[in-house]
Image 1: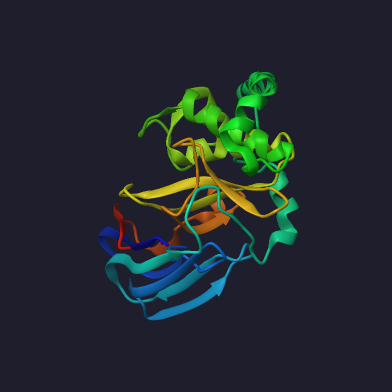
Image 2: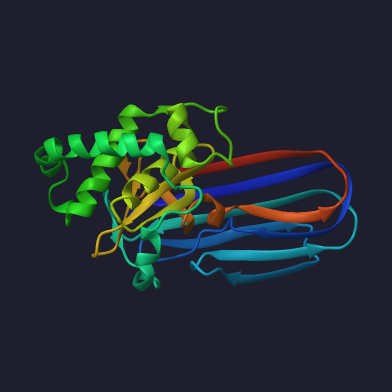
Length: 280
């Protein structure tokens, strides 16, 4: 049974003081049937008014407010993750499995345009020819045609799409990322969601951490009827016990780690440090 230690640190530094700062954070992993989380340290500044709740997707969300002037804002979360079992392709259920149909539909971020539609046609044509090889590669993990198509999409994107930082940003939609044929994990995930939803496959965007990454990561979960299975198109592999999940939603906008507003005309500088290491 694998155990991982993690730390997620983010700091915003302001060029001048700000006030009336309202923020929400989705930075703390939750325990579920796949992972058991123990938080060993949690620090947030400023922290005059802090409360916790779950959002509509079941993610843990922290709300805060600071009226006084301050020059920086940060959170620092440390903990350990222990997994239910070893191996890849872990199917698991959550308390909201009955709402899986919500994730069949496109969002403004994943809605396909001409580039994705053309790509989907090519992908579908090749998928029919590759079905036998997929059965040999994944065997019992293929529980439906939908899972089989999602697995092929994961492989196809992993081989065909180019990883490149700096060519997209957090506002980039799936269609625009597809035109560029390059991007980061967020773009891989959004394109895969768009392609799978064209087939009405329930699938959702996931943010989290990965062993050896050094930064946050994004992947996709697909509902098979037997539960959710994590697929990482960036690395073209099934999600295993080297991944720690933080949040899920319809797309990136549902999983924003930090959102906030404040009073002040300032320049912001952001520092992020994510570390995951194995401890057993």
